[in-house]
Length: 396
Image (cartoon, one colour):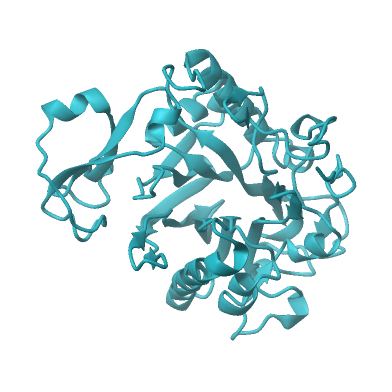
């Protein structure tokens, strides 16, 4: 197996978008982490109660399998979508949750679950802290099973003092994993949130159920912002074959970003997540039209990929099929870029976060992210992706 220690530096290089003078003023970190299958230990199913409002968490929630017998549900063979299930009550079995139980080959009990929570909380609490001296104001999460695991996560000692709020919707992903957002309540005030279902089809013409795009608008330290959390379709089956699915995700993301920007051009936009593509891939370059250089920003191309300079330097956030990739990216609207420190937030630095404890130090996977699982064996690690963050600054 090839080694990538030269590409996964223990201290990942930093990209700065301006040569601003003086010390950082008021600062905020926005970032995200792929928590690599954060499941609870209970065999679960999804329960959809279409009689409730779509924004009500009880519309689509995770329930223990042994609770199904006590709930009203009909036999449902139609498409799985919020619109189709309005007025209906149905149960959908999660294909992935059986893998993460005490009776599975992983022997996934409370001890491993608690270790997993502590590990992810440690990483989140330290993202950007070398610049801000505190935990991130807003954090996106990828590969969470349900709202309860997020609640358990923010209650961990490393995070509890920051009083994180939660925004989460269950998706119809075939494995049962979702994206979510947590935020420090004293710094971010959400005004609206929604999920946009990505409708894609396989070669057989059947719909493939994947993660939604989570859209959250609100005020970060009194500035109007919008966050778009992504976990695009994987490269299963091959990069070229699966690319149309990510192109569709890019088109949906662009539509959502354009919609928010059109409604209020002053809103600062942050799209982030695991795109399962590099900054130069057609999905990001041609369909989202994320630019590589601030000089190329315009009204027609208003989105900048903060990770492009890192990609050109050979920085990677994971190794997919034994090759380095920078799938974990943050893309911002042009009104977040400035060559001066002003009274509004602008980008100071963007990083792939890879402190020494997140990096494998030896063996065939030297230099790779120190992941949680090696097959069915819990390694005590953190994630198969390095997280990413951006530090914002403004005058006090």
